Image (cartoon, rainbow, N blue to C red; front, side):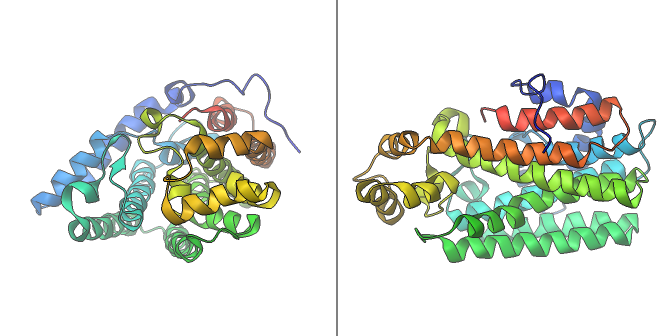
Length: 336
């Protein structure tokens, strides 16, 4: 399996990794600003609030870089619009997730539902989805529409699977990875595949970038799960170990339930049932560290990133392929 080169595994800033498409990302931002305007003032206000929060724009960047990796000289019509569609769908999922999780913060600020209430927020999430699909329909590319339709169904199924398993301390590694695939990785995969299609990729190139995106998406989520235990609240923009407190066991906690002592397993169960009342986040992280489970989670993420690099190894060499390679390093080494 292809491993991540040491020269790539540097904690590169997103601005450096995505410098090649800086001007295109500015166009995507402008397109998002246009898309989030509505005659209903509250929608426009919430849209502006969401954009002010920023974000790494990883998913639209994957679309743009994938398109450039296939067609380095120019972007075809509709590429910027569809890159913004990917970000709109991602934003809609975050808005709905915060309602489901009863989250009161997002990226260090009050979440949309905390400011405007669940009733308005769920409708804004729906509006974001419909806006994304209207923009896709405008492109009249039914292969891409089919990808996004299947994607949205899969993501909804992933959210339902996660809800079914909320509070389940016996969830298996396989069940958790199915949730990761549906909720997170499928969107990364769709972004890269759509970029390939827009670049005029062959069937083999389209498949390669689809697989690249899927594996990068899994790696991204596994690092997110790790950071939930290791990053500070100021960096996370939410409380540490909030997934476990919300009853969502990720790989480190699943492994602890399999390997830990009765007392250590009770730590997990207690947090799931009542939050951090009798057990502290430090109790949990100490138990995870005892079995080197956080290191194991990072190794698992690196393994998927390696698979992503293997998937695109046959693509023609270019600065854009190099950028896709660097994203793998950025994702597994990021601190937030």
